[in-house]
Amino acid sequence: MNLMRIYLFIVCLAGTMTQNILAQKNSHASDHKQEKKEKYSHDLPDFDRYVELETKVDTTGSVSCADFDGDGHLDILLVKGRHWPIVDRVLLGDGLGGIRKAYDLGKVADRSYTGGVADLNGDGSPDIAVSNDDPDRKLIYFNDGKGNFKMESEFGSPEWSTRNLSIADINGDRWPDLILANRGDLGRTSNDICLNNGKGQFAKCISFAPYPATAIYPVDINKDGFVDLVVPHRDGGQSYVYLGSSNATFPDTHRIPFGPPNATIRIAAAADFNGDSILDIVAIDQNKGVDLYFGQEDQTFSEGISLAGPKIVPYALEIADLDNDKKIDIIVGYVEAPSTVFFNDGTGRNFKSISFGDAKGTAYGFGVGDFNEDGVLDIAAARSDATNVLYFGNSKAKKSK
Image 1: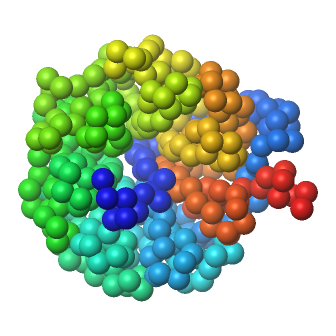
Image 2: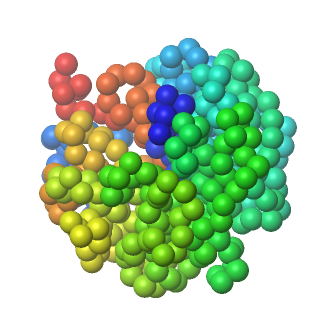
């Protein structure tokens, strides 16, 4: 994989579909998380300070981050719409955590869930692929290097019910390819890989994983040098890791199951959470909560270890080392409840949880980066039915200076 071309500042995977939770459940969960925060705040960062990225409430589906205009500061892409056409927005950062300029990505209002960011045409600037839902076209926007975007081409089919887009070099040609998670009808849908021809065009697409998904996570799970694809089942079936190979076809005969046989998983991500040098999988299931599946030496996965139950419905997931201890932490967003950071002690079995944000709307995605350039990671949250927010990380070490 050519990491120079793939700007996976995209610590920003999207979400879908909102559900309502009783207010009394939200209050109980918030109180419980606040108790934990008070207990551990002496040695972990908090995210109490924030700024609204926009004042208008809409149905934002995801947030992605990169330096779009080449000024050395992180910028933000807000992908909007979901089931309702809205124009996507670009927010240029000032390096201090503020937004110095905001403008529409293009002129098209569409039903968008995710914007993937990578140098798609090899000119050194981060471009954008927007994974629109049925019946809208899926679009490629090229960047002129100064943050000005022009729609250049389409990919996939407008009929695909695409919920999420991820990026990786699938066929080993050093060009970033597009991986589409489609939530079509059970028994009549599949997911797709659209291959880059080296010019940022994606005419050839390969179908795989014939079941509904709302996110796909690319990672070399078995460390054989090929990109594998973690494909969680969204609508009541078995989830699998599809293993990559030199032919980049991802057949059903070359996959590893994980999770329950009746999963309703929205998003999954992979990392070594317990320090054994084997990759594990964390998943948020609408009906089961947040679970961790440990990778085994025989390339199977353990039964799920519960981090949080389904009392409050999880809807967004991201992973990052937020406290700079070289251990991967977990960020979970919820329906009408504050978001939570699960700080990992390195065993994968002991997590200290700290809540942040309010209980408004639904968190659909996160973007993680140092937006105010103070050396501490911040969290940008894409929300539906609430404003999009940037939460600034505050560490004890920084406060004591």
